[in-house]
Every structure is written in structure tokens, then in C-alpha cells.
Image 1 (cartoon, rainbow, N blue to C red):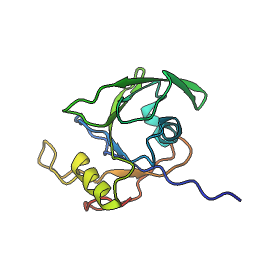
Image 2 (cartoon, helix red, strand yellow):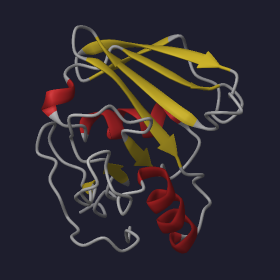
Image 3 (tube, rainbow, N blue to C red):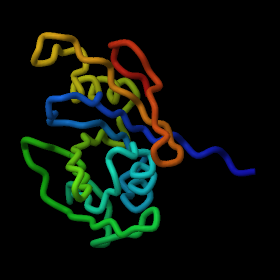
Image 4 (tube, rainbow, N blue to C red):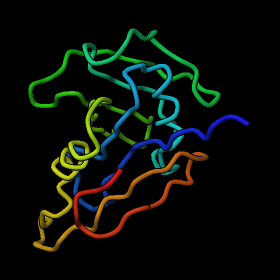
Length: 160
């Protein structure tokens, strides 16, 4: 019997009426994009549709081809230089449905650092535009596509 696969460390911002700069935070286990990306894509909500394009920071990831086959579909990989305004971000594109930006936490970050970076990126304690507090973000566990659900409650810094 093989050891259980680790959870996908993915925290998604709550869905709201207003657009967000960051739609979630992803904490991969390594910088091996070919290993980490398929697991993360499989953990995304069905509402995000089929991701067909992914843009990553060229300097942050190991070498990757221009496209890869994930869950019976081709995903085009684009490498772009990091922007000072958007360091280490992954951009996901789904035709006809939209774009989602995920902040990437370095794989070698400690759990404490990851929790602080997640809280800062999602800022789920900051009031929304209407003055109301935002609901907490959700954490995705590895599993079949579309079966992602909340695992944490409250407004404290998230625990991975």
C-alpha cells in the first residue's frame, strides 16, 4: 500500500460580487510545475471551468514545455517575467468563463510564514466595499474536480 497523497495546499477567496486582485493562494510542495500543476488544477472548483491556459513566473518554476496534457485536455503554459506588482503569481484562463489569479507561496516557506502570506494576500478580515466583513476564505483538499469545500472557519490566519 502506498502512502496517502498530500493535500493540495490551495486556499480560495470567497466568491463575491466585486472582482478581486487575488482569487486564491497556492502553496505547492516543489517548483516542479509538471508535477504540481495537474494536482492543483484537479482541486479547482467546477465553476472555474476547464483551464486551458496557465501563465507562470518564468524564473520561479522548473523548465516546462509549452503545453501539457491534464485531465484529458491540453493546457497551454506561458512563462512570463515576474512583475514587481505581481510577484510569483499563477494566472489561470478558462475560455468563456474568466481569469483567476493565484498568489504562489514558496514551497520552502514554513507553515507560519505561509499562514501570514495567505492572510495578507486574501485579506479576509478587511471589510468589503460596503463596510461588511468578508467571509473567510476556503481551503481546498485534494480530490476529484469540483469536490472542493471549506475546511476552516473563523477569521484567524489560516492553518495549512
